[in-house]
Amino acid sequence: MHSASSTQLRSNVGRSNFWHSSVLVKIAIGAVLALSVSLPVSAAGPVIIEGVWLTEKKSEMTIAPCPAGWCGYITKIVVPPEIKEKYGDDLAAIGDNYTDAMNPDPALRDRPILGLQILTLTATGRGKVFDGKIYNPENGKTYEGKLEVVNDNRVTLKGCVMFGMICQGEDWTRISGPPG
Image 1 (tube, rainbow, N blue to C red):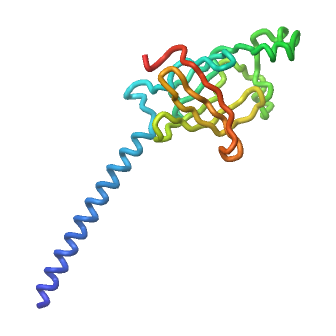
Image 2 (image 1 turned 180 degrees about the vertical axis):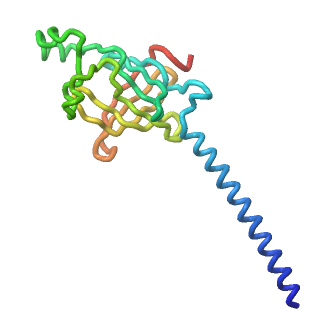
């Protein structure tokens, strides 16, 4: 009788190991798929957010792959009329040499605005929504935010405070770049 019990025990252990192994395989496949969705897809080609975008204030932003995911850089500065009116001759004296004067770090206040990285975005796994950080050189603050693809030629950028409860955003229109 003893040998029948040990045979039954080995059989149950064998089934348990088989079940355990198949669950582990399924978990591993799921983890690989989830990881592949969250990583930048530079090897597969450009992502829909890559390209040059026109902001509501008519400046231009370029979004490109970077080590953190995707980064957005100011590539053309257009000074809005209200700023021109507010600063008048002082603004004219600066010319095109705008600097990050509002940065809370005094060591960074002389860096040029043109070419400044103000976006860091990562894929969320929620379709065409990218989470990240948004630096606003107008006030020197960094906000949690997101960029959502509305269609191939329009995105909405939102910066948020109060744990994402209060958000302000604007729409950008594609000038050039993917989806080609």
